[in-house]
Each structure stands twice: as C-alpha cells, then as structure tokens.
Image (cartoon, rainbow, N blue to C red; front, top):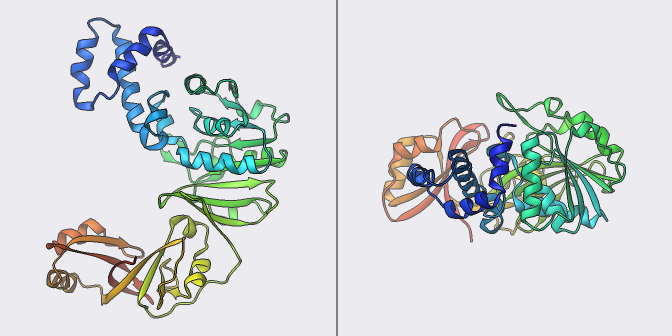
Length: 391
C-alpha cells in the first residue's frame, strides 16, 4: 500500500504535469532535477515522477516511445512484460481463432491486455497485486482502451472464466532467488494453468522458453517465439485444432516453421556454408527441418550448427560462407587474422567453453577487414571455423 499512494499521486493534475516536466531526464541529471523540483513539489511526488520517467525510458525498447511515454510502469513490470511485437502476434492468433473475449490472468501492467484490446478483443485483466492492478488500469485509460479492458484486483485462482471465449495465463516465473525453472514452482503452477486451459474453448499459456519438451501436455500445441533473433517465450496453445504440434515462429514476419517429425540429421564433413538456426528453431527442436531445407547435416551430433555445400534460401537460419577450418589454436587464429588484416571480428560459439571476449583480447584484431569465427566442435573435436555472412 505504501507504493500505491505515491503512484496514485502521479494520476493527479499536479502529478501528470510533473511527469511532463521530467520526461527524458537522464540518470546523470536526476539529482539536480530533483533538488530543483522539491522546492515547489512534495519530495515523494518528485521521486515518484523521476522514477516513472526512468522506467518509461527503459520500457521504450519493448513498447515503443509513443506508448511508453503515456504508460505507467513498475520495475518488475518493465522487466517481465511482453514485448509489444510478441503480444500483438499472439493477439492476432487468438483473433484468427474467433476469440472475442479473453480472461487475462496474471495480467501484470497490462501489456498483453493492451494488445488484445487493440485487436478488438474484450479483456478481463486480473492481478492480485494492488499496485500492479492500479498500473494496468491506468495504462488502459492512458491508451484509450478502458472500454475494452476491465482490470480486477483478485487472486486468479478464484476468478470465474466461463463467460470468456479464451483464457490467457502468464504465471510468475521469478522468485526471491531469480528465475524459476520448475513449471510447478510457477505462480500459479503450470498444472493449475493447464486445468483452467482445458476448461476453455481456446487458451494460451505463456511459459519459459527453456521448458523441457516432456513437460508439454500432449493435447497442447507448443510454440517458441523469437523477435529479431532473440528467443522471447514459449506458448502452450489449446483449442487450435493442432494438439501435439510444435512450431517455431520468428518475428518480424511472422514466419512459422512446423515440425514434420523428421529424424535427427546426420553428421557430415564441413561444407562451404554454415547455417546458424534461429534460437526459436533450436528451442523447438526443429533443426532437422532446417537441415532438410538446405540439404545439409550437422557439424557435430550435439551441436545445432548445420553445414551444407550449397547456399539455399531459408527464413529460419543465418547463412555464412566458411573460408577456413582450423583445430582450436589461438596462435594460428591470431596469425591468420593478422595476415588478412581483420579488425572487425565477430565471435560465435556453440559447444565451446571459451568466452568470445576472452578470445578477442587474445587475438587483438586489427585492420579494415571483417570476419566471423565460430568456436565449436566438428565430429567431437574443438574447431575454429572462419567465414563471413552470405548475401
């Protein structure tokens, strides 16, 4: 409740005027600005406004400047909220499934509810934390979506969802000690969310992308989503008509790769090209589908790098032309880079204990040219592959 009072003060005319005044304040200027403003405004209100200004700056990466400058945030809310591009994609899938109303359970500051409402879907947004619920309500009003979003402060396990077409659940996956990896330790537990999903015509459960595949219910469709190459989340879908399906979806796009149940590709010698599958593809265990697309195989049975002799177009992996293959040897790499005047060095690794920055310090790249080095294993042997992006 102590946090709720300063937040409510930001919604007053004085608070909103102060928010406009401190917009864009740099962290280095915060003390000087606070000292000046406290001459005319309550200290608690000044602190709340400056804190909100900094949170809005952090939130721009997820929500875009136009929305972030109008929205309200909590530190936890900025960290845990869904990126707008991902929430918009998910809302689009629900819309395509004929959903017109959603119970958004564990709604946080309302990022997903906003995307759902903008898709024309009516939303009940529920969170048990008083401050979080107040922030979600303020965000719905700030973006002109209060007519579609009802925010309720309640325990999600006690909310009746029968009157809604779909349920969306985003359980808390962080505790006092950091990230929670056991789905049954989520709050609420995954088993509870699956039970609620099973009672709804359509449901989507947001989970950590590292969830073991064996923990995915057989009747669910599992989707791993990346945005700009970064894996953002996994979603368990119910009611899509594709139970047991596995897909990787890459944003922007979207571009979706569906599992075809292919066997693991075999290991083959290093070809002219190396394909680095997107992280969502790897998490979804769809490397075999990429290997089939490019007519390739694996560098190593335990490494998700695909190698092939031809350059073939694929939306699900980045292609590199390989010019050199060396056993792991820092001195040899340093000599080769110096000979080719490589000063812009990108270091990627998979299956190697060497840290990229450590290697960069040792080889000291200098010169006008660029190269990419892959620290990996080839048929079990530590190997360095040198090349450059294709196309």
